[in-house]
Amino acid sequence: MKKSVKYLPREKQEDLKYIVSMILERIPRTEMIILYGSYATGKYVEYDTRVEFGVRTTYMSDYDILVVTSGEKDKEVGQKLDNIEAIYYKNHSISDILYVGETGSMEVISGRSSDRQTPVQFINEDIRKLNRDLSDGRYFYTQIKEEGILLYNSGKHKLERRRKLRFDEIAKQAAEYFEEKFNRASVFIKHARYAFKDKDYGMASFFLHQTIENLFYAVRLVYTLENNKMHNLIKLLASVRKYSGEFEKLFFPEKTEDEKRLFNLVKAAYVEARYNPDFVVTKADAEYLISVAERLFKLVDELCHIRISEYEKSASSAA
Image (cartoon, rainbow, N blue to C red; front, side, top):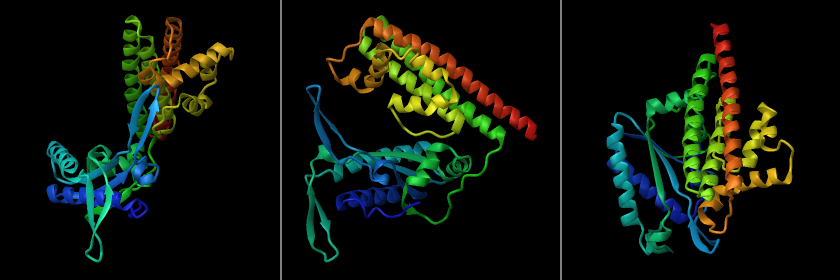
């Protein structure tokens, strides 16, 4: 794991120092503080404003921070982190931020207004649970370990390495991931049906995008136990179609221009259905896409259960 944030602008380094100092002051059993996400990988957006569909929108990446503790109750740590977040926004978001240089001189880092203050998002894990998840190869924490930056380390603990899982453990993880993503997709298609009934076909298409995305996630996780955050349905389809030729048949049975249009429509719906008032989805479009999603449920359910059954058979043979 990396240990330096010197590649970040100085004001970002100062933000992180301030956040770390508040955590250590208020949560004494902090074992590690890890920066992950876009600021850890260098793919962050500091401040972006643009006009989309006639509406001015802004975007800023968060400081994603994992606070690893020992002995503290989850609820208590969560409350303390909420307080730290509130203090950070209140006391650290000022129009001009002063930095005391190595020579003792005061310098203005930047003129930042509160609406440009980088947001912070905390998650908390107990060191024992974190190490169990790392040992088990849980994809979220494994990625944090691989890409994250260690901002603080008490030196009392070491992070576990990923071990080779037994087939019964693989089957258990795969079943958990399948249930999570399949159930989430089921919720989204319910919302899609409600929106369709209310004749809000645009929002129906957004919920269908989320339905299909989560079904693709289910397949990726069951087959590999790994995943990464992605919303592009074309890329997601490309990543799962190697597991069954039925994916291609489902979305492009005859590769007609209208079928391609509908797939591109549901792909675009993730953004445009929410923000573009001119985004047009007809009743027939939404009806067709719901039927595709319903067939995708059956395909994903069958594929994932076959794969989980294979893991379980391998576990029985090994035993």
